[in-house]
Amino acid sequence: MSEVTQTQKPSGKLNFVLDFGPLLLFFVASKFGSSDTDPKQGAIIGTMVFMAAIIVAVIVSKVKLGKISPMLKLTAALGIFFGALTIWFHDERFIQIKPTIIYVFFAALLIGGWMRGKAMLKYILEAAYQGLNEAGWLKLSLSWGLFFLALAGLNEIFRRPEWFSFDTWLSIKVWGVTALTFLFALANIPMLIRHGLKLGDDAELPPQG
Image (cartoon, rainbow, N blue to C red; front, side, top):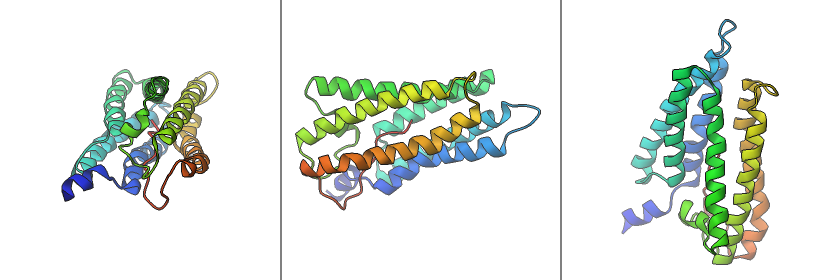
């Protein structure tokens, strides 16, 4: 029984580290790996570090939490796939499009579920918001689905090389999107409390891509 309980109630702090850690290492490695002679070197090195970090995150999640969340599975699979394309073609555009695909996927899943009366976010987060009733889960699923659509649009804007550099995109991806995600999560709290949310438990955030 204790193993089942531990698997169903993950640590919000650990999940944040598993999600944000690879992104932070991606940022640091890209900055320190940059070269004046090869403008793409930083992106390539950062991508290699990110791929290694996401694999470590998957292993840690399995060992510490007893499972690998659907979010982490998708992020790892797409990260490794597009990371490999980035390294093989020496083109950072592949790793830059990965967040758009993740955001669109989750937006379609959440909004599609909401249209059918199903709160898909509840299954993605595995009941991370303790006490939240079904109406609250439906509203939360819709709001996060729309938020993901907005993030997909922003990523498509900032990844355009004719408008923004890779460094600018990277900074916005790591720091800007993370800040927006936390602010959006906080903005939802009053609505969640009205629908039964119990404060004090660690809550897992939806994926940052």
